[in-house]
Each structure stands twice: as structure tokens, then as C-alpha cells.
Image (cartoon, rainbow over all chains, first blue to last red; front, side, top):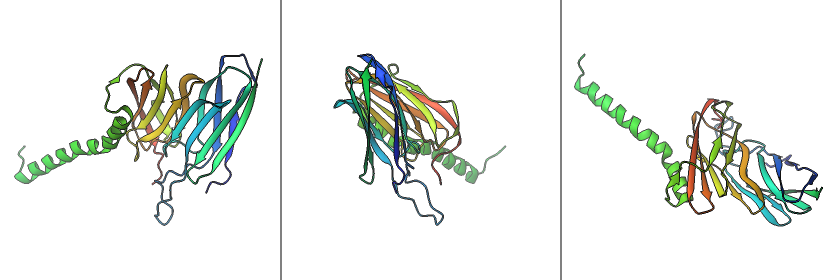
Length: 109
Length: 138
């Protein structure tokens, strides 16, 4: 049921070395909580993204364990330090085993 | 005003149910907190939780947590069918130990944030959110 999943990430293009930048991420996903019922009264099975990680050049920035109480199209905003030019890797892990990845590079101004 | 034996018993039963019910709801929250902290005491300062006082739509309530120097922050919604919301683990490149997200709340309740600080101690903050429309379907 994970159709139309599209990650969106906002990272500044440039930063000064050692600067803390704000990163915003959003992934379109219905985040079915497992609490809702369909028209026949059957429970709709849970189908969510259960983990999100952000790494910069292989070093961890943030690792979020997600539970059903996170809204549809989970949005996260956090800060990261940029010690050098490189790539941010964003990874989302779906309940069904799918992994969604995207990356953004950043230059030192 | 006089009470019959039946009325008195009924009231006593009602009062007993009233006291037991809230405990039941929060039991799993207590479990989650104990699991995270290992039963350690929690300080009242050191973590900040920003949540709206009134949320019109419980399906998407913006919250923000911040705890300088924390290694992890757990967010719990005490009044949800399952209290867990999210746990943020901060790595060496985290610019600040803060994060913002949007959560679902089933109804008016307290949202709790517990931070695991760098020295191994814990801090707790809570915010009461009034929800006009719940966000858990059903």
C-alpha cells in the first residue's frame, strides 16, 4: 500500500564550515495507524514508516524511531553541523520492508 | 436528602470505576517511561516541549522538542490508544538536540517528552493539548 511515496528534502546549497543548518524533510506516505476501520468495520492493517535516519558523509545526524502517532506525510525538521563539503543521505524505512532514499550535497561557501 | 442502600452502593461502584479508569489508560505510558529510563528519576528542567494549547485537528498537531546536550528524546501521547509517538536519537553531527514534527492525538490529553541527557540522567516535560477533532479514525 505504499504507493506514491515521494521524499522531499530542503537543505541549503552552501554553508560555512562548522555551521549548524536547518534541514526540513517530508515524505508523502499515508501512515495507516492500524486503528482505523473500513466501511465493513474491519481494521485496516498498520502500514507506516517506522524509522528515519539522516547521515552526513557516513556520520549520524539524527535517527528517529517512528510510531503510528506520527501524522500522514511525516515531516521532520532538525539541525545539522556541516564540517566539510559532502552529501546528506536521508533514509526512510517502511513497515513493508521498502526503503526510500534521497541525498543532497552541500558546498562550503 | 436520604440515600437508599442501592443508591449508596451504586455511587460507591461509580467512584471506584472513576478512580481505576485513568490508571488503566496511563499504565502503558508508565511502562514506556520505565523502559526508556530504566526507572531512573527525572528532572523537571533540561527538556523543552512546544505544543499548541488548542489543536483544532488532532490528525496533525505540530510539536517541537529541544534538550541541549541530550542523546535521545522520547515523545509520548498519554491519551492515545498506543502512547508512543517517536524517539529522536541524535548523532555527533546534530546541530542542536531539537526537532520538530507533526503528530496525531486521539483527544484532549497531555503530551510528554523525556530526554536522556549526556550524563545519563533524564529530564521530563509535558504539555496539555486540547483537541477539538480526534485524529485516530474510528
